[in-house]
Length: 289
Ligand code: A3P
Image (cartoon, rainbow, N blue to C red; front, side, top):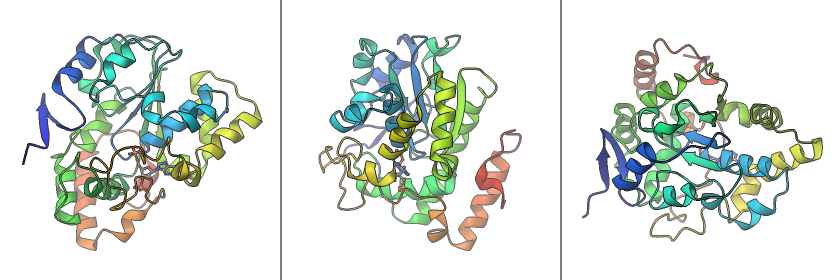
């Protein structure tokens, strides 16, 4: 079998989705524009959700773009095969750009720019569950042997895009900067309208009530699950087999409780506390830790 992942400066990437040349170009040569808006996430934190929210905000609540153009063309990943060259010449204003890159590998020209970053973060236990099912359905990842083994790899960071902890801690170093905002999946889930308003404020975008309603309605789980431009059903089944598990799977918070055994949960909490020591931000999932 051909190799599944390659190593770029100590972080693994899936061979089917990325290549070292494009990542190096994104990191070292890509030119950020001050009006760029970056949708940054660790995989499974709510990337796709934020793609659709940003698209709708950009179009003042008009859903036509979301309904006619695939999300990867509206808010392209910078690090996936061939994408960086398309984004480089894009005439969109502003450009909406997605990335899973860890902070230390992110576009160098971003430093000192006014470009805005929305960093979406989700309970890592729910990320692990979501990623487990994703790994089963996509050829980008290795098919996990068991959930417990998968969670152990997740905790060591021996998976594409590296350790969740390093990703989060790396990006949170930007806390307090004017051009950086953290959005939790949990807050988005609990209060979508309030979250959309907060995002609009951060972006300096004023939408009337009707437009905000449209953003919320057109980014509901059910709507996105049925929208071919958002649910990845246009991706051939040899890349994503949605018969095995749909991309838009459950779209909820706390599904980890249906998957973690008590010992695995205790082990996870122990590692979490060790690794997140010194992080000043408090997250909604930390209440019971
Ligand atoms: P689940 O597997 O837990 O259902 P990403 O886009 O970062 O790959 O994350 C995918 C996860 O976000 C999946 O989680 C998916 O169902 C969820 N998701 C996508 N759109 C959503 C929405 N509108 N509302 C709630 N969850 C959503």
